[in-house]
Length: 260
Image (tube, rainbow, N blue to C red; front, side):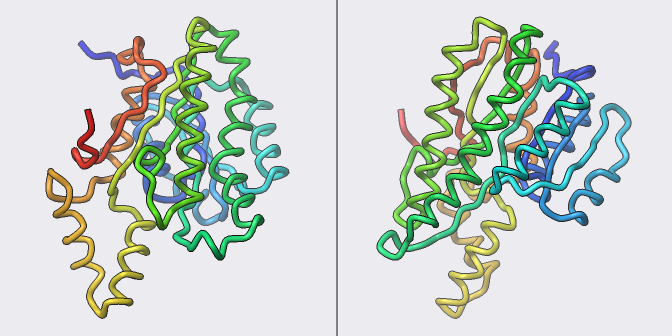
């Protein structure tokens, strides 16, 4: 029998107001974990924190992970209440912009949010995992981290760095019982992709729904994925069922990558 029970485990998910982050919070709690998460607005925190759960628990914090001080405050609040067994580094943004018009500040801001937030959280929560001889860290990277996109240059760079870091840390801390992996979502139907589809529709005079349908047709399974389908893999990687999976980068893209 596959053991996906996370009862007694304390999990942290960053950037969980919508999409994949929100789905991870719900699914980890559904499998028994005590889940802490952060979002930037009180409304997002209240909405997810109020979800009734029969097995685990959900508690939210207001934090802007693109700001070092806010990130550190979030980390300190989490550690004040106990150690962390599971960390899902999910928070991130994916602006589409022209390389020639990007300023240094653009690069720095996105690295603060996408990459350094993951570095800071992982660095802070690893000691408890090592001491406990059990831990899981999942980096929510992107297919853009492995297959660079001309419109997402800085985003792809941050996501590639997350994959690299996860593989390095997996080699370093696997012997301590801490397993560290990356998940690479492809076309997932989230608010981010709806915004992108809306921009394309506006530029071409079409409809957002048609853009999403056409994009989905390019995927071998014929559609966009869902946040729950990504969260299912994350939950598996955080469980005892994945006890020999370490240092991997797994695509959730409906077969779109097509590499050997």
